[in-house]
Image (cartoon, rainbow, N blue to C red; front, side, top):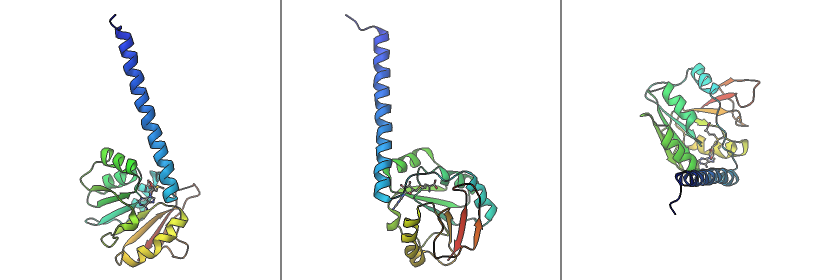
Length: 184
Ligand SMILES: C[S@@+](CC[C@H](N)C(=O)[O-])C[C@H]1O[C@@H](n2cnc3c(N)ncnc32)[C@H](O)[C@@H]1O
């Protein structure tokens, strides 16, 4: 007997739902695995911080800005749209977040790499953005001090460096909305 058209449609929907379920489980498991591996959860920087960076008025044309741990790339995408004359580079260790960034955040002045930022040479950047937890921030200090070029700005979301003095701070009483600006 021929299967009814309704049966075929329901089977297709069921298979699609199964794949979607599998996709979300994979993303969820990967986020959990990478969080344990790196000690940092994936949390997006808030959009309001784009305005705070604009307000700081430090981004100049023909410079390079990098995000160490670029997540899903959406924060860097917003910035790259606001500053078309600045080159933006994101390094992300989670392969799924990296693929997402590559697929959904396309701009001529924006590049993503699937790479551990501890293995990246920081010497070519004019701005380094970090939104990580305190323990990892402290591990980054010697690398930044050794490699980053003189005059490079380090922009830190919320978790300030313990023993470095920011040249500027844009604070907020709301969580995850404070920015610290350091200059080497
Ligand atoms: C709090 S999220 C910030 C995401 C993005 N920068 C933003 O502000 O929206 C930190 C990201 O850093 C990534 N990460 C942690 N350690 C890393 C490492 N050693 N190399 C590359 N990425 C790393 C995590 O996978 C996570 O996506």
